[in-house]
Image (cartoon, rainbow, N blue to C red):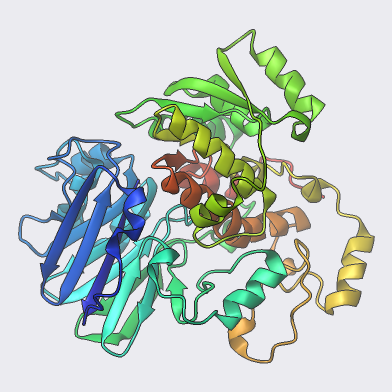
Length: 464
C-alpha cells in the first residue's frame, strides 16, 4: 500500500505533497523530468527498501511506472513472458512487461489490486489506471496549464463542491465514479485506462481494459469444483506478504471462510462491539474457538470522541455507519503494530449474502415506481433513496442498465452492487481509513478469476 501525487505542466507550489504521507510512511521518492513531477510514498509490504524504489523503469528507458498496490502473480507473468531483472518487489515486473506485450494486455492479466501511473517517454504520454474493481483509488484534475493526479482527494483544493458528486451523495450516500465531491476533480473508473498527452492535457483517451461481460452472465458451464479452486487460488494470492496477515473476523460467513481456509493468516481477531453484534455471529465465534485460535478484543467506544479523526481519515466520506466501525478497527490494529489485514468485503455481494437478494417484495418495486417513475432502470434507486432525480443536465444521470439484460433480478442487483455499491462505498472507506492508519487492507474475494467464474457459471442457483 502506497500513495503518490503528481503534476504535468505548471506546478502549483501551494499543493502540499506530504498530505498523503500516511499512505507510505517508510520511504519517499521524488521524480522530476520531461514536464512531469511525481512524489511517491511507500509503505513496504513486499521487497526491501532498495528493491521497492519507484519509479521502476524498463530496460530501454521507455516506460516508468509508479504503482500503489500488489501484483500477486508477478513471478508467473515474468516466467510466462521471459521478463528478466525482476527483484523481490512485485512491481518490478511491470515496465519490461508493458514493453513486451502492451499496457492493456498486461492490465488484463494482472491479478491483484493497484492504482498506477505509467509514463511512456517515447510517445510523451502518461497513463492513469486502477484495478478491475476499484480497490485502490486515483483522482485527477485538468486545469489550463496543468494536469494533477493523486491517490487521495484530500490533495486537491476544496474551492467548490461538485454538483454532480453532491447529487450522488444525497441519492446513494457517496459520490459515484467518475465524480468526486470537489468540482472538476474526477476519479478513474475501475477497469479503466486513461491516456494523456503531456503537452496537451485536454487530449484524453479513455478505454475499458476489463469489465463484467453482461452477455456471459450465467451462460457458461463452470462447475463448483472450478469455483472452489479459484477461491483457493484467490486466498493463496492474497497471502503474498513479507509481513504477518491479520484476518478481521466479524463472525459472518465470508470472514469465517477466510479464517478457516486462509493459510497466510497469522492471527484472527474478533472485535466485540457488544450489542452491535447479533447472536448468530457470537454463536459462530464460540463454535470457531474450538477449531482455530481467535483473539477477542472488546471495544469500548465513544462515537463523538473520535468523530473528527474519523472524518479526516475518510478523505471522501461515505454515508455508512460501517465506515466508523472500520475506523475503530483500524485504530486498534495499528496499535498492535500490524500493517496487513484481510476482510471479507465482496463476499456477500458475490454470493447473494444480503437479504435484499433473496427477499424482493413486489411492493418495494411498486413504491419505487410511484416515487421515482423508474424503479429498476435507474441503477441505484432500489438500493437507496433515489429522491434527487430532477436535474436536467446529463452529467447527473447514472448509467442506464436495463433489468431485462440479465437472466434474473438477483443477477441484476448483484451487478449493480459490483458496478456502484462496492467501489463507491465499501472499498472507498476500506482503503482510505486503513491507509490513514498505515495499513494495507486486502479483499481476497475480489479476485478476477473467482468473480468471472461465479458470474458466468450456470451451476449456481441464482433464481429469485
